[in-house]
Image 1 (tube, rainbow, N blue to C red):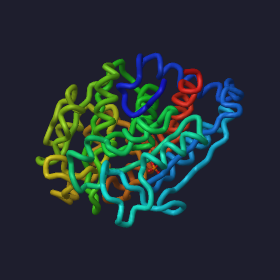
Image 2: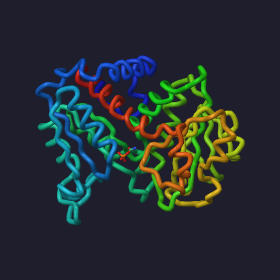
Image 3: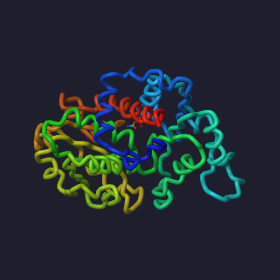
Image 4: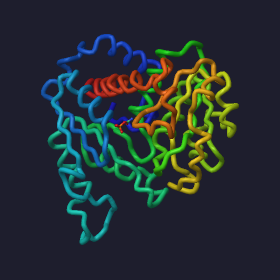
Length: 315
Ligand code: CP
């Protein structure tokens, strides 16, 4: 595997899931695979789970890990082609990435959307420059439009906890005070659609439709209560509007996931990628209930990362 930026980089998803669950049972079976190899983790945006889980994943495989927070430890990087660099960016991303590739055997990068221009964000200009100029395998630690390590961990969690062969999984929009990217819902929709053994329903207020290239296999239901009926998993997430790009169109608290709404489901598990705004996105009595999978889901971030690193080291 030379890059991991989307589910499209996975040749056979059921086999990858099986491999990850096997690795979870035997975390140190490959503890020498990454000996004398260096993993570089480059963060252009903050992180808790992705940073720690990917770092630990590299360590489990015997890798040395370098972490750089560009905003704290570096200077502003220019990402546009052909510009006169007389502004505040001190270095072009293509030069910086070319140098990083000299020190690292695998590079992970987190780069959020700017929300200035949808076409530019959805072109994935920054991560594509990493792929083009690093000369080593690249892992997305969440890009402008996708978060594949999260979605892979989500799929592992659903595989472990599902009670039926093809569970009804509901991705529900929930309110939030800030404008958030569409990366997690886009990616979740893409992975659940590719997994095939998932009945995916997406529910959100009008105006929050995602890019159809990610939701092609999902049913869209604008009535949240109706969507919840019979669900085995409720996956809550806020996102800003894709069509009115980056805008907050609603803060309607009636979309907050509550215990009453969970009663409409088939005793569903609750999922969220975290970080989460309690009592805005989801009420305490749901997220603290025995049906909440949030910590187990976060734990699976380690196995999604370790599996992808293993594939890259083997490749
Ligand atoms: N879910 C997730 O990616 O968490 P962090 O932003 O903390 O890495």
